[in-house]
Length: 355
Image (cartoon, rainbow, N blue to C red; front, side, top):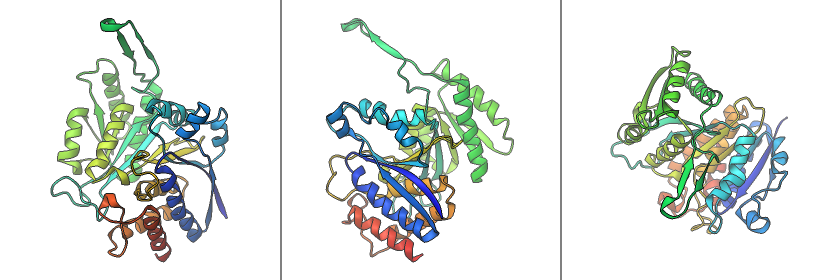
């Protein structure tokens, strides 16, 4: 029997509620399809930082290294600055395990209305590929001076290796998924060095894929196009900063960021990849049992896909979409219902077992 070892990090806030809910759905899919998911739980969070001064132990990465995947909830809590949780847990995992691809679907799910007028299912259905390991998110720079003379320098780092591999992944993904159109997010009319280099490499890599259409937009007008005409996009690729912004804007036009999943991928599979919802820890509703588990469940489906369990991943999504439009299943309050996290996840699980 096929077995997969999964490192589970619920994290903070609602992460502790949506992760167990999603695991119940995923283990049901595994049992139905004849394989085993073995979850090993790691209680690393902002609470860990407040107790120990660290987001995870010194040997944390070594503890994760031998797993097939990492399943993360949400990280962040009042009293701990965001840069502490980011640089203390998430970024070390992404960088040590060379998870240089952040992949996010932007898809309008059934039963959820888009804030965009006259947009229906099929009108919003594309992917954002974000460079996940370098670019604008670096620790290179500094602060000097005081008062009115204070100066802050923040440097972006674009390597030929890092740029080429994310662009090549985007074109490969477009070809593999049948979405033969890649759009690049740039800003070469404002960023003097980095974005002209990005544009040059996009053109060079694109030339290797004559069967895939390619175009580019400056990121400001691209954001506007997401809102005005999302149906024109198939695969959008961007740098770390641009991809980060666009991959949050995308779920926004689908009605709610609560349902959005993401995958931090090491495509070569030399290290475990990490799967997490886009939403945060939502401390305002944590502990109430009303958090929307869809983003976590969908992230789990992406994890199954990555592990090679394509049919079980599709089964999870079919059950999720069926539950969303079932009149007798209570959705969570953010979707206008009065349901609970555990209750909706149980309904998805029951639906899955009945398919």
